[in-house]
Image (cartoon, rainbow, N blue to C red; front, top):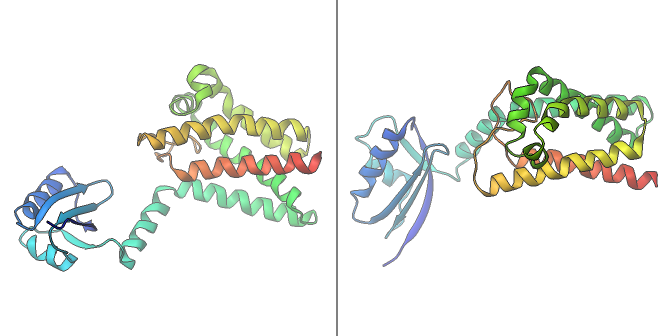
Length: 242
């Protein structure tokens, strides 16, 4: 018996009933041995004894309205996935865009160098992201404690964290206490990065508190990337200062 596993994109699913309808319809086929559907990812996985093209599956469910199956490698699928990603993480991406823009403008004005750019990037990063967190400090602390190991042990750390970020941002912009603030940056980012990695590994769906709680954004590899970039910049700044 040959088991062929293919994954497809499903358009039109909105609820668990949609999932069950498509699953039931496909499982009636003798050549199909297993059907798995993810509503959140709009993904269909079919294990069968023969290779099914999207058109074949669409013929099977043609009497079930409003659903359409397509190859998940198609350009349309990739475009939809990119669009969904940008829509989901738009607040973070916008904040990072303005951080980079401000850092570039400011560092060019002062004779561009990597050291200046990194210092200003970190300063604007802390100030912009602290502003987003300060809009609802208590709610931020609750969300932050779900993945930050320090906040899980000392809840009040989440309360003071936005103010700590604001202070670090100001000190980076003023170029004051360089070694201390870079070391502190590494100290606060490493634990939360480890916390996010653990949550993602366990497939836990929780919100990222990095942009506050005014928008619901799930933790992801983007959160890890943000933190790693900040740590690498801090390490570089320490290295060139020694």
